[in-house]
Amino acid sequence: MLLKLNKMKNQKGFTLIELMIVIAIIGILAAIAIPQFSAYRRRAYNSAALSDLKNFTTAQEAFFVDNEAYCLTVAVLTGSYGAYLSEKVSLVINSADTTLYNMISYHSSGDKTYWISGPGGTVGPE
Image (cartoon, rainbow, N blue to C red; front, top):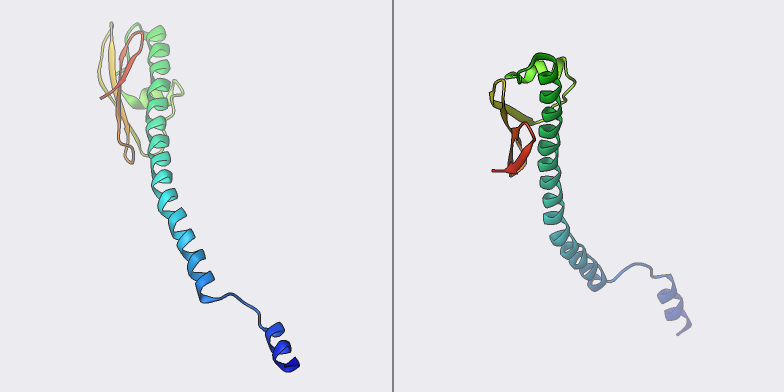
C-alpha cells in the first residue's frame, strides 16, 4: 500500500481531459478575437486615408495663399507644402482651379473612400 502511494506522489502532469478543455477555451477566445482584430485594423486603415485627406486640404489652402489657385498635382503638395501621404494610401485630386478643389483618398486595405470639396472642406465617405 505504501509503495502505491509513493508512485501516485511522483506522477506529475495534466490529464487528457484537462488539456482538451484548455485547447477548447483557447479556440473560443481566438474565434472571438481574430475578427475583432481585423475590424480594428480596417478602421485604422480608413482613419489613415481620412487623416491624409485632411492634411492635403491644409496643403491646398497653403498653396492657394501663395498662388491664388488650388494645386492639381499631389507631388507639389507633398514636396513644397509638407503634406504627407501614408503608406498604401492613394490620393487623387479630381479638380482644382482658382475657386475650388475636389480630392479623393482611400487605403488599399480599407473599405471606405473619402472625398473632400473645398474651400471650406466638406468631407464625406463615398
